Image 1: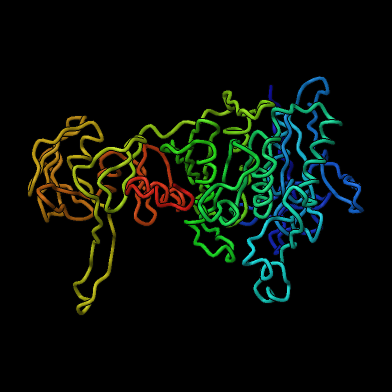
Image 2 (image 1 turned 90 degrees about the horizontal axis):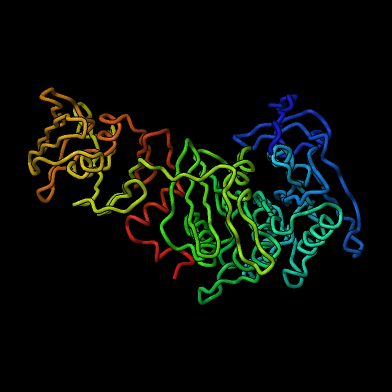
Length: 504
């Protein structure tokens, strides 16, 4: 049984330029910044202060217990870890975890980092002095990390999470098979750290922004560094986000390395199931031991979407549990994941396409052609459009039609009976013996006639088409391709997955 989510009206402060204004705490103020939007401070969020580890440090954490909590029922628990220079209460209001918890009846705990509002996390040895020394970072706009001491299980913040788990079990009727952890930005790095070393205590982990430094995931021989075992993983990435500079690797390498770490550990090395709905690009890798989900959000900056918690709960946490022996179990999730049933993905230079999620041969190779304007430009030129081309015979068959002829001229009959004719070099075609302009001319290569795939999908079938870099995605619904999903699709179609960071 679920309860109605009640959104509280707030006092919008568009003049705010601070990431986490102290005045929000306990007030009705809300602030917005390209998706990093806050909610009104929840009345049921309680603050707790205690030297819980007995080491002289007074830790602070926040608990959210939904109104529907029943001490007679086993209840799931979610840890949510704040970003750098934030707080536990800030993580609560910058997410929808408390709203989803109220609706679905689970508990949340939002801990504070113990020092400088920064979690103690692993650092690679080569950059240790640089990234933990304020003087060396002066003027960079990057805050110094807490210098780690001892092994990861000995870090105060890791011990805090484990002690809070123990405390929550003592205080509430927690379902020990359904404990989850999630984090944002540096909280995502902290979540990844807890998952890799203490993952036996959690059924699943999720995070948004700030992937982990790959040097902490793989040793010098590309072996996985892990003490926690398999678990379901959700990684949210934002299109405009950037990898921390000190990792020494580019965004693509780092993001793919993070995905591949868990794919290898979870036995999830097959093709992803792809669902692009609006600006959210979801790639689900199902594994023998556990699953991995990548969500790439178009046109978003660093942080997390306000509905990230809802997405993570509905498509992952709501259906996963872990038995005492470490086995990950799956039950139906609140919302069933459905891959796009009618979609086409193409990548420049590829000889195959993803058609309805499956690789199929093209009968040629995708290429790009620019539509040019040059008259009146005194020898110069302007690119008015740039299009990926695919064989018209393949496109016709992809939509259930048939090829009647191919070459310098070609004819295809679509499944609805329309007859189309094309000629090499001609920007027009005929549809049922009526002239129709295309966005760019037809081109014959190696005896096969090609047309712009975007035009074919959009003009003939009203499909939504979006592109990123060298990759096109067309679907029978609104779908906007984002950069990380595009990179993953491109590598699949060009058969380059084996060369990605972390793969073997």
